[in-house]
Length: 149
Image (tube, rainbow, N blue to C red; front, side, top):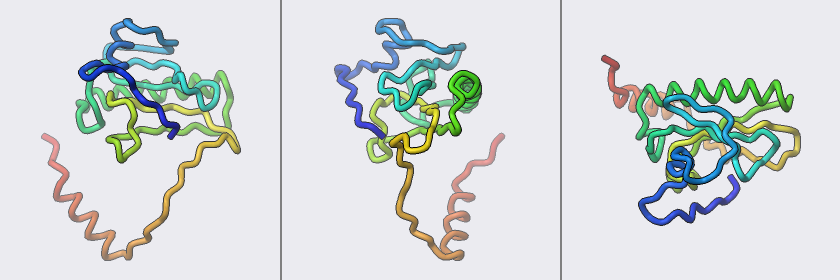
């Protein structure tokens, strides 16, 4: 992801200021839980960020309702991008934590129209664990997932 440094003073969130209308933004859509606006670092025409209105730093900090609302807004935005810019692909990208390449610590999702050779590289070194290791990972995660009420 391109490097962006949020220069907001400690305790101030640039996206919270945007939601509050304190700083300008090219807004695309908003509802009670989400806001969608143009990324100032456009990768391709139509690159939009979908964020929660309530401040929450990462995916682990949002409510299930906010998670559903963000995905519904992202789908609505992706449909508009497709209808408007007709890209051959669309990538959704969401990063958590510094090591996950998150640069603004307010939950958001990138909706990026994609074109061949657009300079975006989403690749990583495959580790290819054996089937027994994968089954062990799956069992650990299954135990950790809390049953829903």
